[in-house]
Length: 216
Image (cartoon, rainbow, N blue to C red; front, side, top):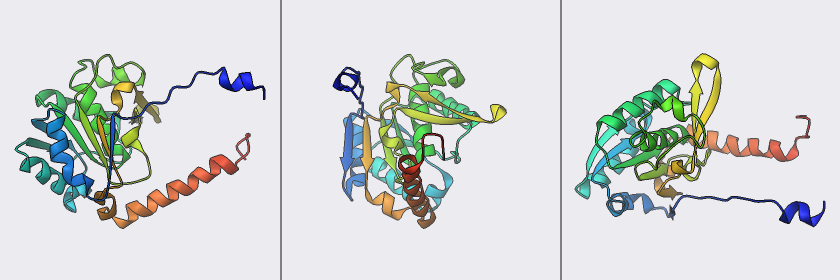
């Protein structure tokens, strides 16, 4: 390959504004929320994480800083457009000023949806596609409890369109987190089967390196 074929291309590499590491880093979420101007918080999670109190610990940390917190925990795996519409309705009615997502990729994707839904008034279906979101969303903090999707550092929210039997996504720079946590203790506290699935997802990445161009 000619060198010009490489250096002549244009590449675009984007990341969240801030990535926070460390086993005890999740305990700083209340301070981080205040630093981002948070006062009334919408916490997005799922029922499993509420049951094992991972989401509850994060909520408690936010409350300790004097913040108001509402919890939406109806996120399901591979969330449908109907779930995204529920999240949208909650985000628009609540007069929130910050979103916190605590969970796996599906939860974090719905936290991104909540963020942009609060500031962009069209039906959420109108934003499914590439660069269709018109305005920045609410500040958002993304806190993964798994290590399989990397949603905390992407600008994508995957949505299942049941009537079309397909997956699509909202893709926009406005979907990036303002603060994203990585490798905190909430990863270690998550259910063991979720951690095993993460390992399997990593093994699947080998296929992209070992497979042939024709899919074999």
